Length: 404
Image 1 (cartoon, rainbow, N blue to C red):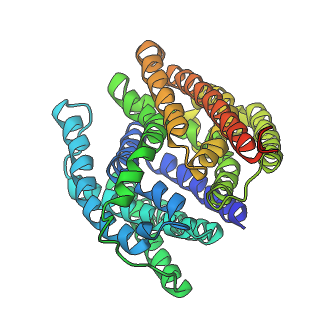
Image 2: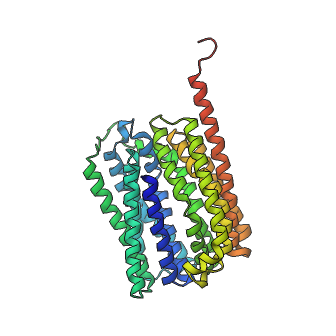
Image 3: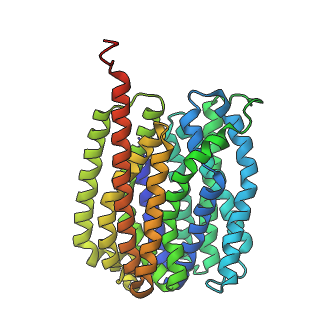
């Protein structure tokens, strides 16, 4: 069910990409991509890993109650506002992007992104992955509906498009609140002796979440700084069809996260699902690579024909990324924040270094090549991390000779 809802959600995400490409010129599409990236990045920075910590410890540790999680999230929402507006101010100060007249809308969008993302992981923490995916899908569908109305009425203003995403996040929050109340989840109690438990534990996972988001999102920010908004717009369009296949690895990774957190995950299960993920990802990559010269101009418009080459490069990275998406969540569920954080942080370092080498001269194509290198490093490190974790667990279950 989680896969089904996520597939539906990604269909709406793809539709949103088509609508925004049709409604906006490449330069404006680049501004939109930058705003959405700021929204996601500010959430990860300000959440301090609490979203991952609540999923790892809520099933077994009273101090990780949802009541404590909500109270901490309310405080971190203030930090989220400061971070998001700080990033916006930097772009404005450096004259990279003109956000004139959009500040209030951007601030509101980032606040809604933070709130909805924190609530999504409440459902994931109790194993309601399909309900979480359903709520997320409803949000994407709402955005698609508003954009569709704008497309029919020829509403080309950038502020209208941002408003459509605003509506999507708002409806997602409503759906999550209704679901949480309807399920009558036990919110638990505050633990006065451990008031900052989730933050202390979350910071350990923060490197994983931050490095992961920096790697997945800062490519467009870096491209904005090192190239032009035109290249950002082309790159953002290429990311949409290439990233569609992530639905499989993300969905399976979420389920395996929960199994690992409750100590019900075994090596054979991981291997079985990884085989399925890789076969589906490689098959999708081959098919899309063949049809991209016809599909991209047809769906997004001839202005985005340059995105075909970028799509093909990114599809190579998607194979590596599918491995990472599954196994990094396995590490988080096993409470192994160090190898998880190391993999994402290393990926970000490689991405930045490659960007400075490739993006200034090769634009969006250089950005795509940098992303592939980064995903390769991330995938390799999580494979090593999971392998070490499974070997450690095997040794702990096997009695030594003296005990025997």
